[in-house]
Amino acid sequence: VALLALPGCQDESQANQGGEGETPTQQESVVNAGNAGSTEPAAYPVIGGENGVISEQTSNVLRILSTNFWITEAYVKIREPEAHSANRGIWYKFEKDGRYTSGRWLESSGSGTWTFDPQNLLLHIDSPNDEEDQEYKMQISSDEQIMIWIGTERYAISGVQRKMVNYTDLIDDLPK
Image (cartoon, rainbow, N blue to C red; front, side):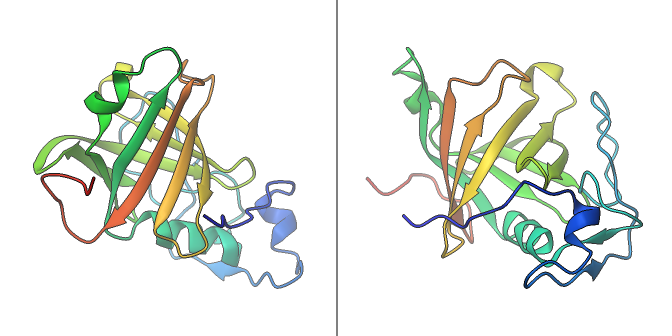
């Protein structure tokens, strides 16, 4: 699977100063820095940037994240092979305002807020239940239908990797 190269070496303010192929996009909402422990909806779920201005690339990532349902097709946790079965079918529906809904198969079971840090390519999922908070480094396939999430140290999930697949509707089982 070819993955989009998402450079994380410059912050949004540098990216907006006319880098190659980058055109700033003015967002109508205020950029939200994502307060840990808060599940208030984000005005706009981007960490960094000035006055709501984000790069075209960051805008594309937000569009991809907020398209349809992202369903866990594969889940790997180091030294826990049974974790795959327990996490297969978990899904997330990300809204452009920084809210999300989650569940497993056809059932909805949670909601909260999310933010994206374009400088570090990090997706932060903030649940009202602090034990369900997560943070992942992201990679996106060139066809925008698959994401690989790699857990970080922040919530002690550095041994976790998820293969997320984009579906237009919820399903009760994944293809084998």
